Length: 106
Image (cartoon, rainbow, N blue to C red):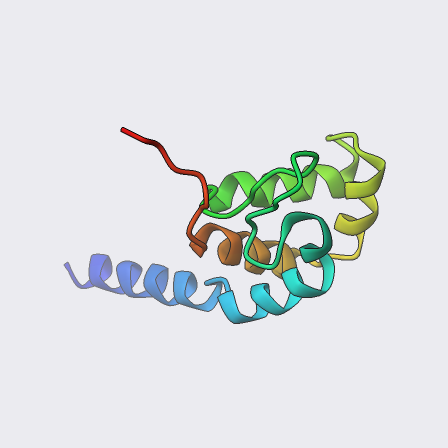
């Protein structure tokens, strides 16, 4: 039982240590992403997707794929190339925490 408690405590500490920083994500998003996707991820231009409210794991994977070239878009590759692993986690957490402007009548 003590071993289980120790393992759970270690997992909790690891998760807390690697938690994304939404404020840092907001700052990076303002610097890198806002011109196309909007400051809060609710782009008003139909050429750029709305990122607000999107799942953070999806956003992080998309950015990693743009950075590695697994997802092909010259513009996004250039922007993603400037992001560190932590930046990607932070930006993904920030945009996912924003309220999406998309709505439904029903």
